Image (tube, rainbow, N blue to C red; front, side, top):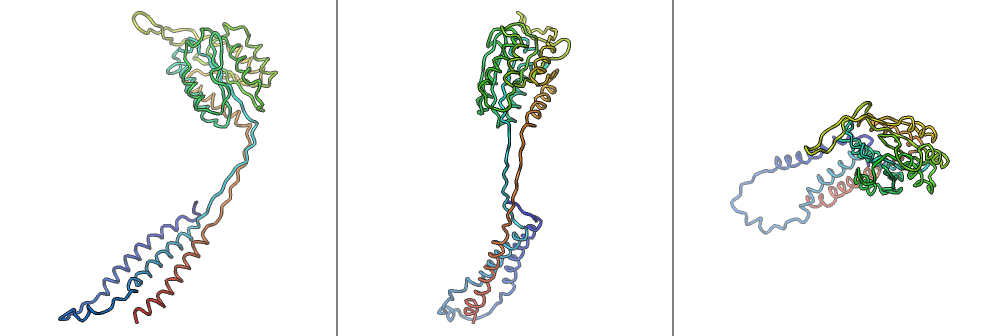
Length: 328
């Protein structure tokens, strides 16, 4: 419910003022009479209609309330939308190798990637999304699901050391594509995030990309890490020490994967850029959804006008029948 002319609602302040004036007027009309005894009045029969004399102000107040609200033009708003979507299935394939613990992104690459990806998931409630993790090997952490609460909890639980260390980009992509092979969605997407180059696994990245192309899977690749050197935590007998390690992202391989599959390559050198990349991917995929919105408003003032007229009619009849008889 909404009002077309809400400014008229300020007139409601007139009602308490009117009631206050009525009370003040009644008090002013009271007179005094000096008599020697009240015995003569004790036998007088009290009229059963005496309370009706205050009914008029009550009915007029309710009628005025109804008229003011009617002037504000209450409307019931009914809206709906017709959505035409390709139906998007998304697999996020994320690197969890030891190098993802480097702290050029905060608190480190792995945690930054998790947090920003979770925000991306929450912004796409209507898509089926799954999660693949890879290091020296790869496996599916969560299959395609619309239950994003479960997906987010599983995403939060991933950590370095879950599988043998290494960077099997081709295996990670192949596992992600395999998860989409039975998908009937018109749009199938993999977001592959890594900070290194392919050093392990039995499937070369280019081969996995060709498989993705044949299955009409679009791959967005994201290289995570600053340029040059990055601080990496190393456990020593004296506690955590930091070493500056070179950033070795194979941008050529990642760009080639994106090119083969019709996707796009991005480079995230800090948290903000990684967030912007997910936002760009979000917009690129949302562009494939067409939504037509409809709005219909229905005027609801007429019942209020009728109620106000009915109250005034009742007040008029009482004043000219029952009260008139009671006062004569």
